[in-house]
Amino acid sequence: MNQARTLAREAFTHFAKKDFGDAIRLYREAIEHDASLGLAWNGLSMALAQSGDLAAAIEAAEKLVEIEPDDPLSHTNLSRLYQQDGRIEDAERVSAAAIQRQMRGSK
Image (cartoon, rainbow, N blue to C red):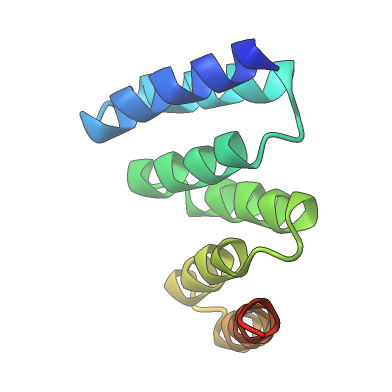
């Protein structure tokens, strides 16, 4: 698992430099080491979106929500991607789920 986190951190460094190709490659390597690492799925989703592969970004974001179903930010990210893809009803549904989770967490 440490290897996966190390790769995800390295991927983020590439993402920050707008080197999305290497970021995507490293996030995928991190996921190969630990498929439950939400940090890697989130980063992969963002890097794919920035590189223009919205369909793959949505798939990664959906996987993130599956892994971290109670995290409001995971739902928010997926909602944003759905909206970008023109899937407004899906975006609204996921956004509502994010709000519900956030309200649960603030109690």
